[in-house]
Length: 131
Ligand code: HEC
Image 1 (spheres, rainbow, N blue to C red):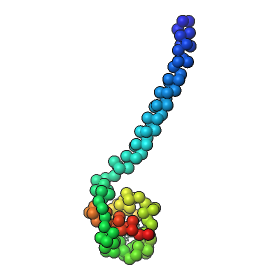
Image 2: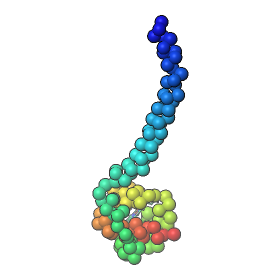
Image 3: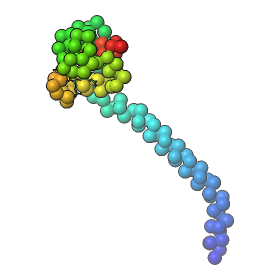
Image 4: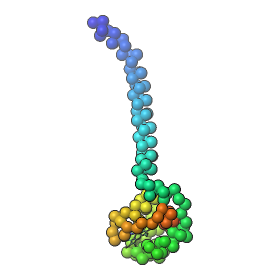
């Protein structure tokens, strides 16, 4: 009986502390979740994507590459032909998705391109320059 009375005395003192521990655990879990959500996309991207995103692209060079490789399907002014109009495509797709679109070949009839990272960075800059 002494045991049960001591737990009854102890519980009021324990409850607030358990609440604090729970709150801290929840806060820590939230912090970890936010960090994972922010860091995972960076960690997940492959070396090619990371190399491309680390470079400064040239709109002029990207435009030249575009007219040679892409304009046949997307139109000289990227207005759309066989492939869709690419104006404002950077509002629909992230840089990672744009890179995937170009290098993956996952959406036939658009072929799989293998530009080196600098050429890909130039293409990205060109796509961003389209109003
Ligand atoms: C053989 C024709 C063809 C060529 C060449 C081509 N594309 Fe495409 N492209 C397409 C088609 C078709 C789609 C639509 C694919 C789908 O979503 O099913 C597309 C989609 C895209 C998209 C996504 C558009 C959106 O609205 O989400 C981007 C960005 C793109 N192309 C960029 C390029 C670039 C940059 C090049 C040159 C390196 C290129 N394309 C060359 C046919 C082509």
